[in-house]
Image 1 (spheres, each protein chain N blue to C red):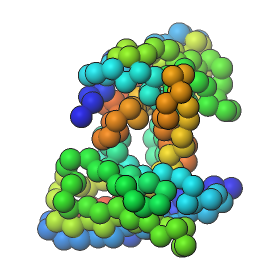
Image 2: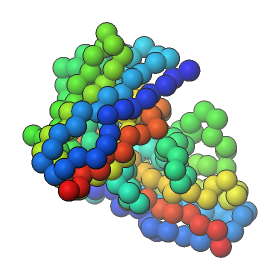
Image 3: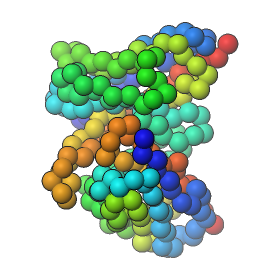
Image 4: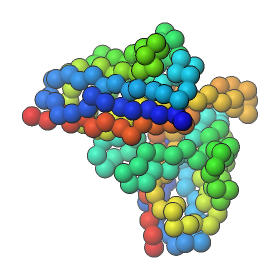
Length: 107
Length: 126
């Protein structure tokens, strides 16, 4: 099983800040990496797939990068609606696995 | 409009069984790999199982192997999860999720979850 480890587990930031979340896979997963946003009481929403491809309708302030074992999700200018929990997920091999999540809170 | 509607959750005693259903509409159901993903209260997301378009291949997370069975009925546009020998640690919201295929930069096939149901809560407790 491929382990996905996100850091940090939580962070506090202000509106307008640049935020970076990292995700590390326990073995190479090429670019089979997706990012999701989940707000309390809501279902997850896809932001990025294939490590760096922006899902249609997602604001351009979200971007992803990386390949192999190390990946990042960047929010270039944090907006009020971006306060949520973010998950990475690999589809390189079953069992598909998620990171433990990164909660982005208001400073 | 794509819709996934789960049902069948509830309170069950440890060792008991439940069958979850997911009714799909708004897309060609038999063209998609379908999944169950769960989320324990206050915890993160955990992929549980998936099933290929024709039902011929099924995969499970180790913690449910031998206890859970995923199936689909393409004629009824429905996905199922039969859960037996339930444990307290199976308590979670169970989501039905569609997996969309994409070509990676190296021309291999990857998947992401593009549509999710609203979930059904399963509580395992005496």
